[in-house]
Image 1 (cartoon, one colour):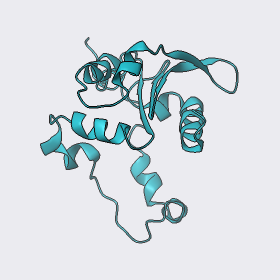
Image 2 (image 1 turned 60 degrees about the vertical axis):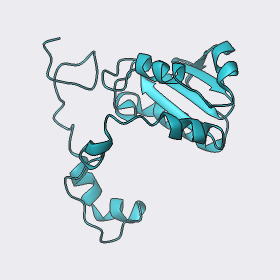
Image 3 (image 1 turned 45 degrees about the vertical axis):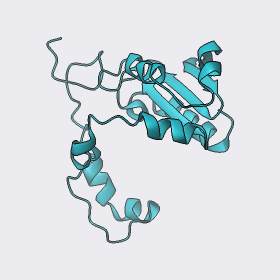
Length: 160
């Protein structure tokens, strides 16, 4: 596409504040709030920590969890990396999830934010809440902080 930014189809350049989280998590008030004490924070990341598992399927684990507890799977509709068609393809391969037939017969619904504007699309089947955040890339909470907060809060409260 001619763009250096790999997290969202609608953005070409990294924002200056893209990686300022390291400064934020080192602040004493942040460390107290997230209960990490004196544990150091460096340049570790989920990506580098899981590099060996990056291309391994998690389908079996996802199916196991779906039959046992509430699961929220979300993505942004402009996400290039974890795009929605890829997530839909994962569900097409499901073999043991007990609610797979209901999944195929259930439509997604529109979700409006507390402000009344459309925030995204939701498919609810059994323990699954599959949410596609509208106007968002890979970093959903960054692209749509208000709607991401509403999504997480309602999932945790059991109202999503």
